[in-house]
Image 1 (cartoon, rainbow, N blue to C red):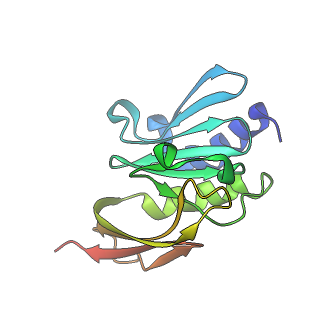
Image 2: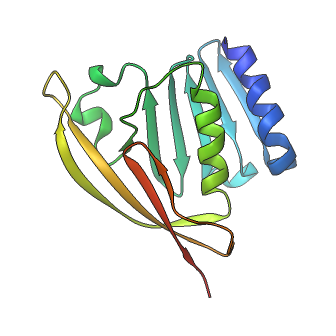
Length: 155
């Protein structure tokens, strides 16, 4: 897939759910913002080519990068780094699935646990436990490789 095909894929998958709030800002051939919450811009993701996505939700950043082992701790400090295999063919659906998980919820907190080092030794491999609140009673726990999300129902 190229960037134009990715934009079409995301628009097709997300427009029915996010409607007019969804905006695609194509800055360059390898740099696109997909905004999910309109003017608020608190829920969006950025494509850096076809193998690197950063998803922003409630001031938290999820990093998906097929060049993960080239990142260093200053690139990932405070972020949530996906440690599973980033297959550029499967990544778009992974992002859509995560967007639907995070939709209608807000951040409560996160815990990080160091599990090791990347091959260069310049960054830690971490496990993340994210707590989110939601009004949706249908939400249940979600796991994506080293990232788990636990939902707490608002009362």
